[in-house]
Structures are given as structure tokens and as C-alpha cells.
View 1: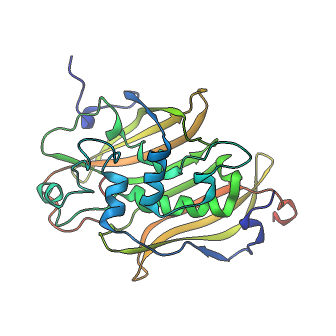
View 2 (view 1 turned 180 degrees about the vertical axis):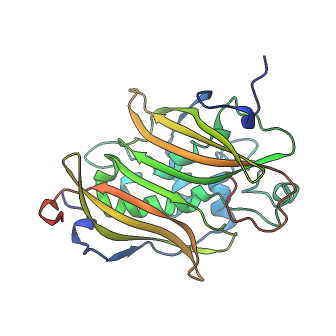
Length: 152
Length: 151
């Protein structure tokens, strides 16, 4: 059975989880992306491995990263707001798992809004990052000028 | 252990250094792993053609990129305590173009007691070179040595 399109997902439904491993190369790619060379991300602290930069974890949490994410032809999505809670350090070399659950959907001004919770767990099953994200779906081609919100 | 935030006065603003959001930096964030055979991924954040197909006049930089600037600043301010419940709540009032210069800011608003822990409350934002806010919100983190300063 084919999975639903993203905009058809309803509260309580989940996207398929994603696993990814943060290598030194990947972590340092994201340090370059945000020009942040704090030693905690390069050498670590107190003999522990370097920390994973939060931007890398954030990057892995939009639902578009899920293997089951399907976007209908002619539709796009834009990120509206988020609330993120960082609950424990994430270390380079770790394999993480991301889960997604839709928390609310509604329509407003001809747009579909979808709120969901993304959670990043480390190899011990510890919750590292919890994000509540709000997003909209829109029809591609309708936006002709530079948009106010950044597409996700 | 003290953190930079322990030396801040209420009302004081801490700034990140300004960063030019170049195409190279956007590709590093949104193009997929550099060692991927298909790098860079083609999407609204990396390809002018993909953006045009979506009805956009140019590449839209991912909001994650400058939220990364902001959270990086919060880690600098809060130290290890950031990874013990550090919270940021933001929205994006306007987009960022390739070439824009962005800096993040955090203003210490005060302290509160949350579940028995002293917590710094901050107003946070990112702005472009024209002083327009491209991200706005609040943040908080646990601090070590502020118990006496809770109002």
C-alpha cells in the first residue's frame, strides 16, 4: 500500500523514522555551513567526543527527511515556526534516530497547516532534541514574489 | 562552572559575529553530504532552477541555517547548560537571500525559577544588514549561579 501524501496525514499519524550517523566529516560540513568553529564541536570537552552542532540535528528534523515523506505533485511546503528543546548532548560518532508524529492539522486562508513533533534519540534511546514544528502546504507556482516564510 | 550568561546584566544584548550567507554555505547546509555522488541535492535552497519551478524568484535559504547561528550563540552564552533543557521558540517573519549578512542576538530579560532550577529568560532574534528581523522569538536555559537574582 502506498503511503499517504504529506498533506493528507492527520493528527496521531507518524512518518517513518530515519537513522543517521554523524561522522566528523558531516559534523564539520555543518560547522562550515554556519561558520561556527567552537572547540566543543571540533575537539570535545573532558575527554568526550566532539559535540554535534545543533544545526545538524535541526537539519535532520523536518518531516521531509522521513523515508515515507511523499509530497503531491504541484504542492510545496513552508516552515512557519518551531519550538525546540535540547535535552542532552549529542556526540559525534553516534547513530541517531528521528521520529515524527502529526499533532494537528487545520485549514486557514486556503492553506493546509500541519503541526508535528520531531524527536531525535541517541543510541541509548535518550531524547536529545524535541521540536514542535508548524508548517503550511501551498500550491507551487502561486507564489510569484519572494515569500515571507522560508520554505522547509 | 560559570557561563558567559552569568556575566550579563538584565537588558544586555549579546551579538553573534555577522555572517555572509554565501551560496557555498547554503550548499553545505542544504545540499546533502559532500561525499554523496549526487551532491548537491537539487532543491529550493540550492538551485535557482528548482526555486523557479516552485514559483520563487530566487533561491530561498533554509531557515535552519540562521536558526543555527542563533542556537550557536545560545550555546556560547549558556554553556553546557544549554543541553539540559535549553529551549528556543521562534518564527520567521521574512526570508533570507543568498549574499545577505545576518547576525543573531540574545537579550537577557531576567531570571525565573522553573521546577526548582534558576533559568535565564531571553528575547532572541536574527537580523539582516538593514536591521530587519528575519527570525524572532524567545529562549531560556538553566544557569548555575543566579539564585539570588530571581525576582
